[in-house]
Image (cartoon, rainbow over all chains, first blue to last red; front, side, top):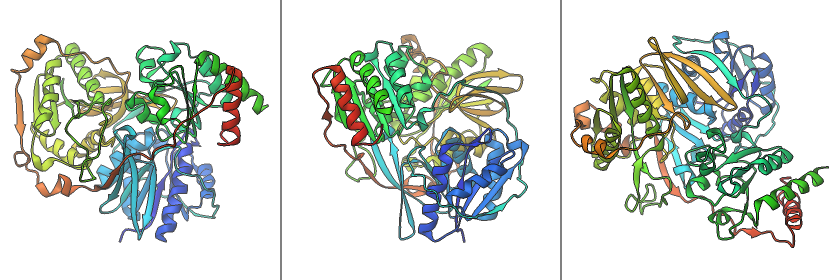
Length: 321
Length: 262
């Protein structure tokens, strides 16, 4: 009978992505609730240090799938290796991150295993041994509580949402030879942004600009820098060509859940609100006190963003120093 | 190059979505239904490839009778023919079941490439493209902003956090779209007229040899127990002051002292 929980971690170039800690922490909570063991899977090439690092979050067992073929994420290689492992373990629950990689991998793996997958969950509740996952739909306009039939039950959790909890344990490390199967795809090049740009979906603070910026994002960039956060944009700002597609927050852009979201000169179109409504605290700064964004904000400032934002940046610098 | 594009009709992203009386589905009236925005990118990309290399573009959709509008839109943009799996039993299918239906519908359709939206902006499942590729036994690449056809393979520029990764896959393959891939064209008036005469095959699950019990609401692996509105925030607290500086200091004080976020 299927039992136990598998948490699939994610690393890039030898470093865990933050969602890995979230996934293993949430996996630990689910496993404890089910009184079942937790296995953390570390997958890549040369992952010994990572396998040791993940012990901090309390897995009972760590499986390292280590092979040069797994150095870069490729859907087919990763799916083959994980599906083979999962067949030997027969887990009741598999948890992954709903990052770019996690969404792609979990979708293919679910189809391979014929498993139900609750994608991009923001909460997982356990009652009488039954898992109920909450997942935003329609870009967050509606929340669905879903249950998964059969096993394994697959859950992909939205990055930046699940609490990270350290629970160090001397988990058992296993290094089986990965079953790589047939791998048809090749990663030929990686073009990574230079500099220390913070990824929107992982940022603790996001400062976003909309049409009200008139295309001038400098004050927003400065405030984001002062807060150690990332810069986002509304669809209209992206459509105007002021920011790149990758910066767009909304139903047709990125869905983000930072601790603090500051919307500047954004009126609050439904499709934008959909992309940021799970942020913990929302601040809106807009000239128009009637703008719909204020109905979704915790704190609001009605005023000229070009006067308010630089003053906020100064105040932030002062309080930090 | 024979290309299949998957399309889905979804509520317009500007529409207000309301929960139906059953508590597990949405109210379907009074909604403006449109082609899933990521599928528009898929149709456009297929047309550009066809214009450059020749071939055919077939549009495939699973959905209620109304979904035919979306297929016609794709035909009006320039696609050659449509396949509409229209069967009330398929209603309420989850991603795995939809992918199985699509795989069955493609059994007799020759293709080199399938293009799909990265997700439907309705249930936001991000699964159908990958699952279809799995069931067809072909590679897939997701979140593509540039696709280059090479000899017998495709090179996809795939967006990841903090950059772009180039992945090559042998054809036949499937890729899913990300914003930035292209700017979809609008259907022209002559295009709309022509679309009315283009072939559109309608299939039922029986035509595809699909067991009704494995799909639809009853075949779901991911069962919706309840839909609800997101938790409401408390009424906004406006921060005021005599000067921008005073407002800023007060805002930062609140964020620092009360929310502990700065």
